[in-house]
Length: 140
Image (cartoon, rainbow, N blue to C red; front, side, top):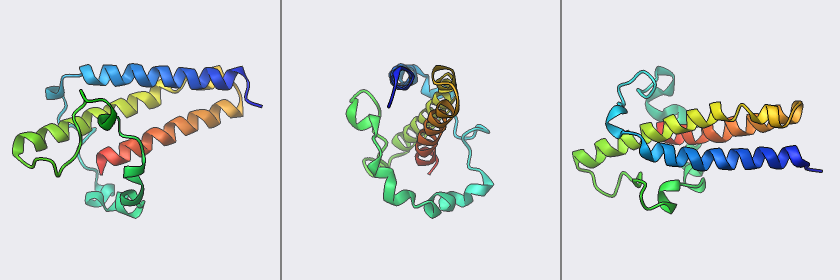
């Protein structure tokens, strides 16, 4: 049976997610550079082939995309307009989204305090896994 700690975790993760969506929308996009050590391509990614091997093309569009639901968020579609300004903005938006998902991973740590024991560790692992899926989409 799912008890109060489980629902406490669910509520915490939901609230933090909404807050971070707002925080992410407030970030100055000009401060996010794809050349930064955090966002630049890694050698192990092999120009995106790592993500192709994960089958990302099959599942990436099945996950929720906040930019499709919230009109104020820049839609991350490459095929809409391919001019230099839109591509620059797209890259900045993916950097912001990647940053927010890394922050969400860190902000998920209290889940292990809310739900102590192995279940808290498991739920934290789910938060990490779920956010890493979105990081993979941004990096791809």
